[in-house]
Image (cartoon, rainbow, N blue to C red; front, side, top):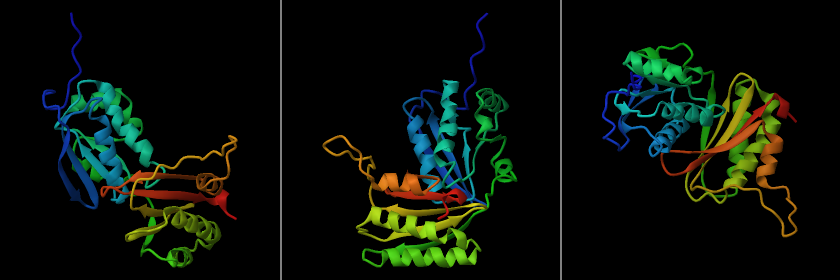
Length: 260
């Protein structure tokens, strides 16, 4: 007797073009409704769509998978991959809504729920008490000019004083200035932001274009201290994420172990 095939979401695998058929806001959360087939050819498209949504820092991201066809159960790992990319920053909660109990069973069987919870409805996902992380944010727009570092440091000092986290001021001013210098020259309005959780502070800045950041080498093969090495030495973690507008966001997290 042949084993029963894994059940797919309610859509034929012949509809192979994956697209975000609907995007809507609900209670501060972004709800995505992808349509099509989730497989090796569309995996990155869905993952990157989730990552780009996270950069705007909604309350949470909920993906309704009822109109997805998933021929291979391993493709559900797209959600754990997306979660891995956004877990440190911006730390936006991600969840799945699947009305079909058999689909939820497949997701659970593939251990996706260890990292990304799955609910029967969008409303259930929205009501999950774990969905709202503790965050405080302050932002400012930077334009091209030598005052960018001054404006950024002023925002950092004022925000951390207001949040009673002045002990982070020195390291965040150093890191914030470095991020601004890394993205110079600023050719258009760029958002500079500072965010605080319970025990860490994140500084981030928009970049107008995608830049590949690699560790440079001298002709002799020695590796000089680069802008990337500086971030690694000063921060708990750092990285870049694409936003929905073709730019990327450069971010750095400072924890208590980074205090100077």
